[in-house]
Length: 487
Picture 1 (cartoon, helix red, strand yellow):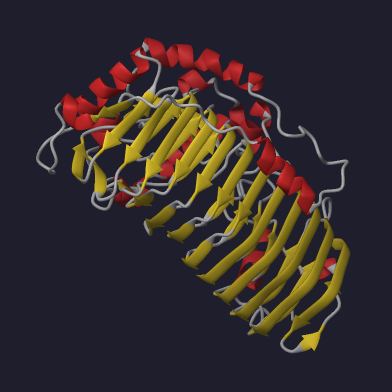
Picture 2 (cartoon, rainbow, N blue to C red):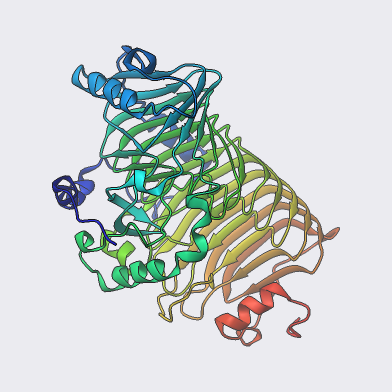
């Protein structure tokens, strides 16, 4: 059963055109400029902080009561309405567990503040998150279940404090992944065919899990200090946003597809001093999927990730795989990774098109890469048979180390029409690459400076293109490189 659109939802379609009016990036296109770490400092300095009035609205004063048998959402809505009417302010959740039977929709100039010991526990009933809202799901625009915390084209918003947002998804949304394929494929085909967004309506019976926190088309966003746990899907998802700061946030959520944070077609984003324990990528930089991503045409650019801890994650620092609008001017530094599958990871497939360029990575320490340490992948699963290879160029990765890579130390494989290019690895140390020290193919302008693998200094070794087979064979090779007989 699909839910009809409300008048607000129909107006939301028209508002997509307003997204192009968001402030330009610190520099809208840096592809022709040399990127240095001074550039990262300039990006950080350019990010504008939200402006929120100091007025305080305690949800208790509006009738909220602690405990999981009382719905405090009406009190939250009342406090929010008063704050909006008076020009904004801080909604305060005091110590205690606060049950919320439905989503919180933030508005401009509102700060959601969780005091020490406060925990917001969201309803596990999917019906509470209808009617559908405009969202982006795995890179495709559609109407779907509301994110648990959602802000639509708001300015100057914040989520702060030392409390916890608990998505309570373990027995609800998080169980849906095995049932999502039919709707997932239908949405991808709609994106491929550029079906009008107002016709892409999903909801009851479709099993597309909503993200936990989504800022859609917002400016000047801050998340600071809070803990996010038990998420339905992607945990924190800024899409079409500018001037976003995540500082001191902990994401501790191990359900399937629980990415920590996904900056998506967004610009001027700082992620610092955060801790990620996630069931998928800790940080995954996105820019839309395939034809739908090209049609929107919004890159992700000017992103700085620094001083983060990733003790145990699925993957660590990632770009893709939904990156069709393009990704550029990305800086990652001073992060520690305990255990992850792939650690410094760029991923696409020949459906995606787009580009990843202008990436600088330094001072990353890794304990165990459960597959690959440094990974440039152009055959990510889910290929639909197109031939639009992504362009990978201009990477500098330096002063990084890994104790153990269970499979590949360094893996970089391009496409005949689009070799991965202009990659510099400098001061890279991999103590033990158990299966393959390095595998480079369909790659050009690769430079190694002081790269040590298994105790030996190494130079780039480019394998011939005929080493590779079709994408399915390539995935088999990545899974079992030695048993494949091609090394």
